[in-house]
Length: 129
Image 1 (cartoon, rainbow, N blue to C red):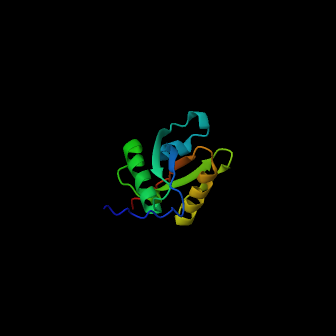
Image 2: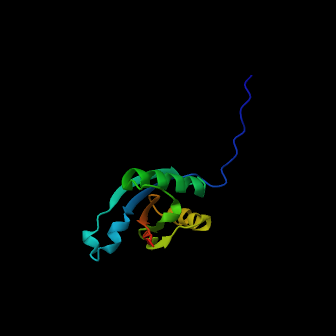
Image 3: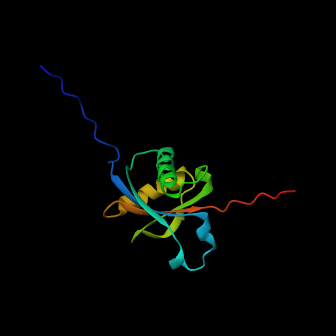
């Protein structure tokens, strides 16, 4: 006789979330007209139960592939999110609490989709003395 594994009901259902990524390199900060800004687009599909560090790592992989910076660190980018009809104003994602808020808002959406805006921060120029 086979023993059947007891299955525990999930405390929180896991959803596959689609993130539409809009990445802006630092050069685009100088352009006043939004229509003239050159941005890179991509998407990312990941589970809602992933930890914040994994989310950051996945974003860095996409940033590296599309913006191709010399060095990469999450701190070099301003990351914000918006969710149509739920949270239309972009909110920053800088720490785990922000990420938890993002997941909670996405779960309210009909299709589990969010827009992620990634803006490269300006790098201060080194002064030669």
